[in-house]
Image (tube, rainbow, N blue to C red; front, side):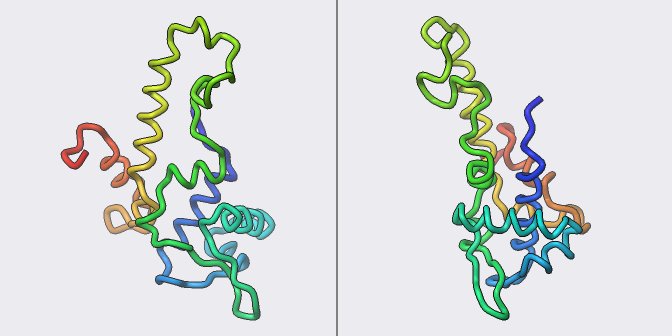
Length: 157
């Protein structure tokens, strides 16, 4: 099963909250914990990690907090996954040369590279704005809309 970690999932939820907030909104860890019902220590850890990765800016002071460094439509899910999980690599060989001892005689390496590129490209076509956009008028994240845009049969691809 291919799955992102729970912490990356939390990081995406936090970033989507920032994306749904007014532009340049400064939100504290406490506010984010309340808004997402995630534990404050987890939120604090993830906000620091997202700031270290260059996706959030940390603002000090009494009215400090965090804010997005770029607009939500300029941040892709591929970037977020890279920042929180590392390179998108479905198999050891897709990390780069020398990561698999079977590399020299592997007959499925090239197809896995194509699959890995397709997954990366699909994630790169989905933005943080897509994730934060309500689907069908509900308060849910717009994952359905983003997934539809990322499918190869979609006319805009």
